[in-house]
Image 1 (cartoon, rainbow over the protein chains, first blue to last red):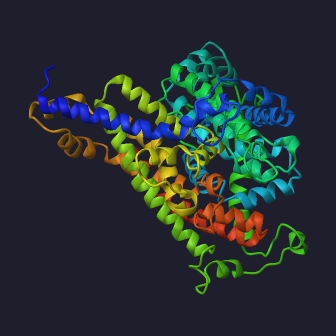
Image 2 (cartoon, helix red, strand yellow):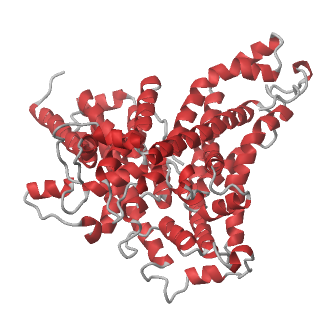
Image 3 (cartoon, each protein chain N blue to C red):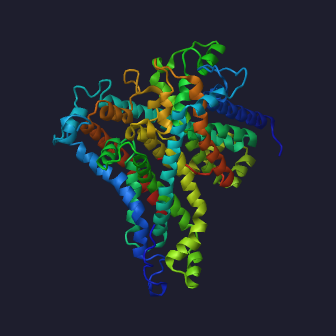
Amino acid sequence: MRLTLPAFFGRLAFSALAALLGAAFALPLVWFLFAPFNARAELGLAIPAPWTLQNFVTVFGNSYAVQALGNSLIQAVGGVVLIGAAATLAAYALSRSAIPGKGAVTYVLLLFSSVVSGSAAMVPIFLIVSAAGLMDTHLAVILTFAGGLLPTAMFILRDFIDSIPKSYEESAMVAGASPVQAFFDVALPVIRPGIVVVVVWGFVNIWGSFLIPFILLRSDKYMPASVAIYSFYSEAGTPIVTLLAAYSLIYSLPVIVLYLFVSWKFGFRFFGGIKA
Amino acid sequence: MTADPLAGPPRRRRNFALLSARAGAAFLTPAGLLVAVFVIVPFFWVIFVSFTNRTLLGRTALNPEFVGLANYLTLFDPATFFQRGQFGFSLILTTQFVVASALIGQALLGLLLAWLMQTVPAWLKRITETFVIAAWILPEVVIGFAWFAFLDRDAGTLNMLLTGLGLPAGDFLLQQPFWVIVVFNTWRGAAFSMMLFNSAFSSIPPSYFQAADVAGASSWQKFKDIGLPLIRGHIVTDLILITMWTFNTFTPFLLTNGGPSYRTELVSIYNYRVAFQDFQFGKGAAVGVVMMLINLAFALVYLSLGRRKKGR
């Protein structure tokens, strides 16, 4: 393809602008590439000399920090197990069953899920959890997220199931399978990629969230990493930068890994397009 | 996850649905219960609590009294409405925040990025997209801390850069807190708009652009006359979604705590302060109701658009 001179400079300008924007997006994160590996890290940008893993050793030696990562894991895994199971069953019913008023149910759920956001509903969520006697437990966080993320998870999965031909299950049933057998043995394996997407999406959402555990939990024993990170402050209230930087990196790692996994497996099309 | 007692053998079923209504209902039950308790009940409970003087501690924590519209009258009291740290101030601040950081910042930047990504070399596209998406997927506390370091008055990367360029350094979190959270939220959320517009642009048949190339159209003309008109529907969707998310976001709290002196106190943060720092649940619930009504307005517009699209 031949390029005229103005077109060439146009391309060049486009590339320069894209590079500039990319750099602007990278800038606030550059510090994170260095500080975790610098034993004397401060808020300023500095190349570590020497590079060291000392900060990570300190983090892993801090039992509270390690426990908090474990708590994040418990809450995120607990949440996505519930979301994955309940959303799959519900989405399958919405797609394949003859329940009257399916459309209306879907519409109402979609409406409620966008109206009742965490920051608008923090008072009633606090009161419900408190009334149920679940305050300051893992279960409080798990159930709140499961309820809050389920509507979106159901819609993602329902669309996915709608796109699968019914003839799969129909042929199983012609061969004598019950509808429930057809679901578990025929449909479920086909739906699996959709479930993976929903589970990853739910995990990233719960793992990264701050507000809900912040208001529902009190004791150190249950604090997830997102809230516990605020304990890496000195008595005077200044951050202990070395620990914070290393801990932030460890805490971000699962999200990065999952992102890479999903974009490798499915191409990062629209996963996570809808955040809670 | 109980397998409903088989919902009648297949041969008796008259319609073409694969699951009987009974099995379907059983499948829907777990999700239905969770959503009912944690989404639908809170919606009605918050309305109820907003008419009481419930507090977190003290006598009215256990025995709240019905106070009618008192909480709403306090929120909308004309004498204090616009004062700093009051509801009206927070509401106006949030509106400005949504307009500046979502409708202008995220949407325009996302559109620009998506358009640039159509023409730049693949390696540059990949690198740029990686950073834009990283800003969006990393956990909010990490992002908050990264920006705290980035903006540090003495050593932060931004001031280092400004000084290097011969520009005056500043303590932006103190001097320009509002514009800090605007830029912050633009940076944080532009990825969504970029990806949405990216997939919208790539759904346009390439022949349209090739024809324009043959006719000697400039990139701006192609954008204005082909790209933009054909993705109008996506733009509307994008604007509504990012408006709702930005309106409800709590993330700036992690950077500014709502301060200094309430200058970044968005309604979500105001709601938190009233309910969990001042312990006034009744008043906090009233804030929640107003927020939900605003969400409802946007959600209805959004859903009606979706329905129209399906009807076509």
